Length: 339
Length: 234
Image 1 (cartoon, rainbow over the protein chains, first blue to last red):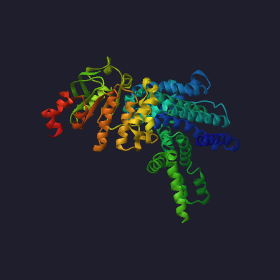
Image 2 (spheres, rainbow over the protein chains, first blue to last red):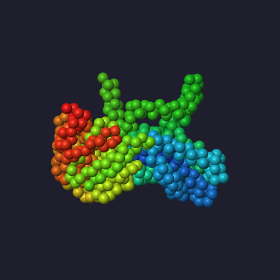
Image 3 (cartoon, rainbow over the protein chains, first blue to last red):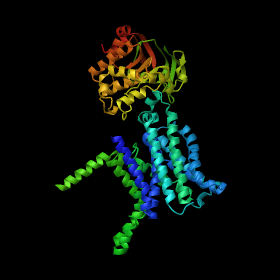
Image 4 (cartoon, rainbow over the protein chains, first blue to last red):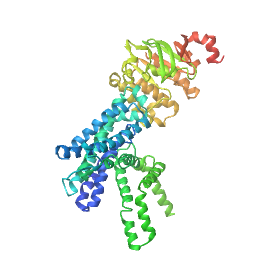
């Protein structure tokens, strides 16, 4: 019964997401939704590696950027369509991930996380310095295939659904047990006969592939990339961690929920309350509102920091992981007010 | 069956075992005794492949264990029940047991073995759907031993199974070790509880500062003046 209800709920959410662009004709909101769906893919991938397998990555941008650059380079060097990037971008991310994991999975915990951070930085510098191949800081600009946002929206939706399906299939299979056992206790898993190096590699390869595909989609959709955008530590790697933590580490739907929350929060800061504060400031001409809207835009990183502190303090398992706790807290507040 | 021969083990640059040798025969209980930091756990970790010796060799039924990776050791019929249980705390008891039976021979017999484990530890049957992290210390130790048994091992490596348990529970664990051994499983037992260990084991070794200093049958060591003074406190 619960299983059926779960499936019904999933289909309902998917159907609602599929219908939204037919109802909402506002390009701005569609843009945010496309970004959110892209983050569902990246967040789910991060969650598979960090949340389920316990190998925290600080360098998802390495795979994201690789996917994006693969798509862009296919266009400028070989004249292929950037859409091939969806195929080759994922593969190239795996090509980067494989030797990296092979060597660096000897490291554990924080040391592995630092290695991923280093990979991120190395690739960003390579993309910056190797001007003859990557065009360096100039970046890569391509013609987008569609003016309408609809095709991108549906491709992003399909990828988001695919990533969640993959995570679910993986975690329900034998692999899921192996990944969890590595997260819980790597030595115990190893002595029970789990080839921990192999399964960590497998988890990394799946995560890198998904992240690379998301990067290729980004190239196609935005039409412009440069090293500081797609290999960005704070906008990609840290954002991936935030999506996972805010949504719920080690939960199937956590990263999906986290993606929507984080894209909204990010946009809220970038535009200072979606431009409403600015509008209000203009309208009322109150000096405080004007400076508030300016400060809010500047305080983008600070706001992220505060959000993370609050989430870790009050909902360490994320919105999805602590959903029950959240509901109880809300209910208590309501009854408290009624009295 | 198990032959550890002249093994030297290092943590980084620091040597912790010097030419340690021991044997475990078919269906034997062998106790490995010694004070804190003597190298007991190190010895057991070396047998199960988590540490690799720099010198010497480890042989089990004619297979060189020191030359294969840790995750292949269990395929030769050796199960390691680590110190401090090291269960997968967010998995249920049953999932933990399933994780113990990954090798093909064990997988085929999974249901039977699980039945046997549940008969040995009826508490685990009651709690099989509970996350292992919510069990009491004694129950967790039972689950850890159960997980080891799920591999249908010929040799069970038990590292400090009575650690942190009440005297009553500790006695129960020692009783179970005997039952497991009666079912034909050899046991290499690392323990601080020297008295009980000597009572149930066939043979025992004493490790001091990384070197083997004494060995003999349980009765011999119980009568040994040095053991009496240093470990039994008589």
